[in-house]
Image 1 (cartoon, rainbow, N blue to C red):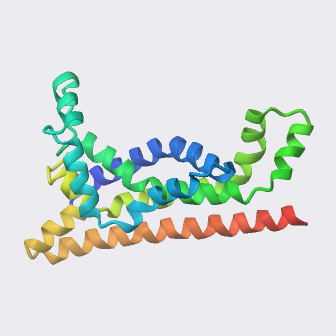
Image 2: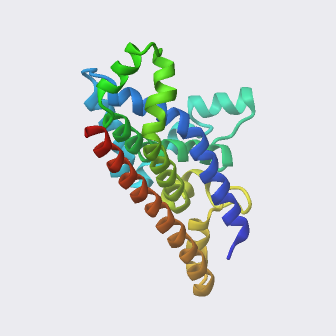
Image 3: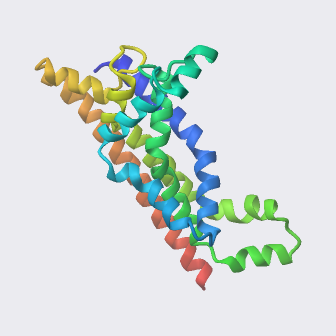
Length: 226
C-alpha cells in the first residue's frame, strides 16, 4: 500500500466534497425549482463530465490552465500560482469533474419536495430562508449524503484527469489510482492488488450510503403522500 498516495487521495476527496457541497447545494436547489428556459442546456453541460472521456477534459484543462494560457499565465505572474502539475490545479479539476455527482442527487431530493410544503411554511410565517433551513434541508438531507458519497468515491477512483492535470508527483499529486497504474507497470501486482481492493471497498461503502439515502428518501415521500 502506498500510504503517501492514499493520504493525497483522501485529502483530495475531502476537499473536493467540502468545496462542492455548498456550490452543489445552491445550484441543485435552483435547478429543482426554476422554470428558466435555458435549464435543459445547463443540465446538459453539467452532465458532460459523465459522458466525455477523462482525457478530453484533462486536455482542455491543460490548455486552459497551463502557463501558456491567459488564465494560467496571469495566475503564475501575479499570484505565483501554478495550476498544472500542482495540488491546487488537481483540486480545481476534481471540483469541475465531480460537479454532476454532487448536483444530481441533491437536485432530485429538492425536486421531490412538494411545493405545498413551502406554501404551508410561508403561510405559517416562516421566511424563505427559515423554510429552507427548517423544512427543506431536513427533508432533503438524504440527497446531500448521496452527493457527498458519490463525490468522494469518484474522486478516489478518478485517473485520467488526475494524471493529465496533476501528473505523478509523489506526496503532492500522485493518488491511489495513479499509484496502482505505476505498480502494474512495474509488475508489482501484490501492491496494485492491495490498493485496488481498498478502492473497491470504499466504492462499495459509498454506493451503500447512496442506496440507503434513496431508500430513506422514498420512505419520506410515502409519508408525505399519506
